[in-house]
Amino acid sequence: MKKIGRTEYTTFNDLWNDKDFLNDEDKARIEFEATLIGKLIEVRDSKGVTQQELAQLTGLKQSAIARLESMKSTPQVDTLFKILKPLGYTLAIVPDPASEKRGILSNQVLAESRSAYNHKEH
Image 1 (cartoon, rainbow, N blue to C red):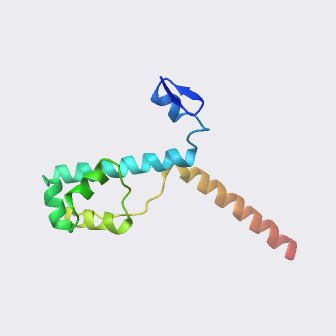
Image 2: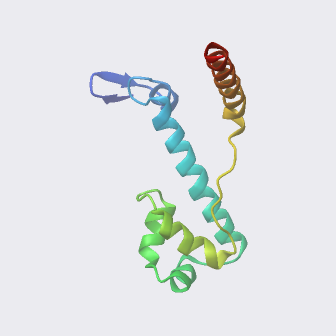
């Protein structure tokens, strides 16, 4: 059992699901960073590249790559590009499947609002 502030947590899930400790935005950021770093490690390993070799290819220090991979630091976008380029990858913005329905719904509401507004003018 671990006490943080006045709250005692018995499992990681207790802490993870406590909305007073982590809000949805914080959880989404943590999940994104863990997925991103996990993918970076997976790609580096699949190419057979060591942290030291990646450091030489990118001009970064091996210790910086180790800190990034252990999630002790959050990489800047330019650092991500430096790491991904020699591995044959890049960054991309893609639709979030979990948000697509909300986006469509929002677009419908926006279109209906515009339609109602245009009808008032005419």
